Image 1: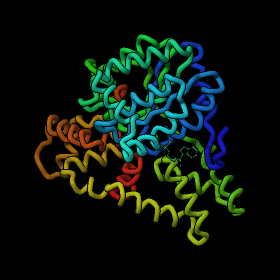
Image 2: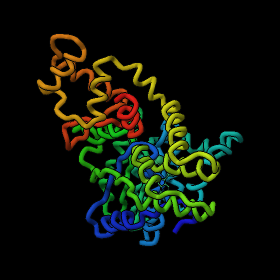
Image 3: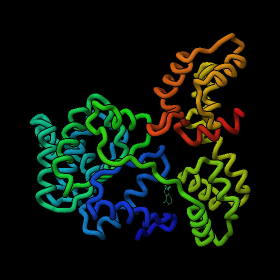
Image 4: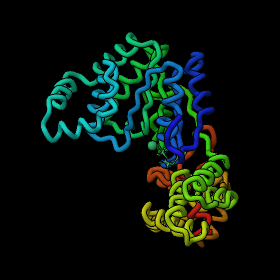
Length: 361
Ligand SMILES: Nc1ncnc2c1ncn2[C@@H]1O[C@H](COP(=O)(O)OP(=O)(O)O)[C@@H](O)[C@H]1O
Ligand SMILES: [Mg+2]
């Protein structure tokens, strides 16, 4: 299905999702998982080919690092797609760069269109899509970036248009900051409240690491211990990107053991993601809470937990509001999040969680 020998196919998950759209069972889905867990790869290399084989017209857009230009870029790409200029949508990034340099007509036109009312454009474009095709699938990647107030009109227009045309136009959203997504989808006042199903993005299992070990052997003519690779994947928080990076290192350098290569890689990752700084900027109470959460401790407001915290901090008492405010502060900084369906907190970044457990005890 794809030419990339390293890609581990998730076609059955893709078939399942597309089946839900084909039968009309659902019209919108949201997958959430932290960054680098394979959402984009799934949309582009698994969902897209399966959907196209089922006759869907597929449009992809990433809102990652959305800024003031994003709404324009999105409407431009969607407009091009609705006119059947899908090659243009695909080449959109390149064209944008060219038109910036040359001050090309496309950029000017888009600017005029936006001033003419971005919201009307979204509705118009989706209406045109729905009347032109009876099977349209929009893949909207990293949508939590739209949670910013500046994007409220776009989100509202999108919601209305998708609601109106949900029989023809289906959508898969992904998001990586679960706290951000929660804010965007779960507030009763938010336009996407109860819009579609929220699904956790399934973790990859041992078939994934076995596939990488086989690809490694195919490429290098050397063997990679499958059990050891699976253990490394577990220890790296089940992050496929890190597993790929590890295998790449093993391919490029014959000397280190898998274990050594993993240690070196993880040290660089913690450094570049600022895990140590995050930790150092936390108050003592926040650090203790992070450790409890990393170890899966529930009921952080209970008398027993608060007594334990008070003892560790050497104070007579820790109140419920102080625990609440520390947790809220950690959530605001994107370090922890609270799943809707459960009352417990979790560490947002799986690699940070591993670091807390391994390095901080
Ligand atoms: N199914 C897969 N097969 C092989 N490698 C994968 C797979 N999914 C993810 N990866 C690796 O992980 C990296 C990060 O995945 P990506 O889709 O960009 O994550 P996300 O979109 O969730 O941030 C990819 O660039 C790739 O190296
Ligand atoms: Mg992505």
